Length: 164
Image (cartoon, rainbow, N blue to C red):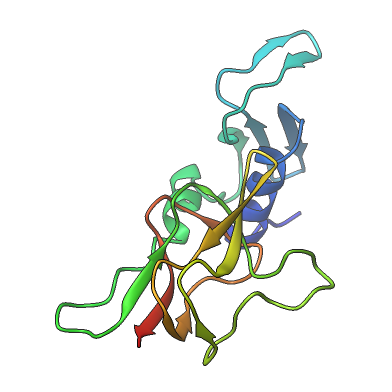
């Protein structure tokens, strides 16, 4: 069994967004345990917490992705440089970025769309709550820096807007 950084990131995200408190994967090459911080494990029963999943590698005879690689694999995008006429729309919280209200529905905005102050531009899901993010400026969406369903950090730039 082989785990890429992307596979590991998706697994950590799935665990952190579920009621699962601990998960252990075993193969001939490695054993990997994912456990939410603060979880109390008593025998085979664990008490859930509201914290994101923590990655703990138990043993390995093959190369395994270090847990720190997950945290640094998707650094927050930097805001536009000084002198730029673009305004950044930043994430107000840690969560999962969604471009539309549901998978089968169209995106709130796309590149080239004109937006107005107060218009919903995306959703950030945090702890199973859907938080609509509203534009604080009117303008044109120049770039969307995050993929749909991607985890985002507090303060991470999500979109760039050219104000009008």
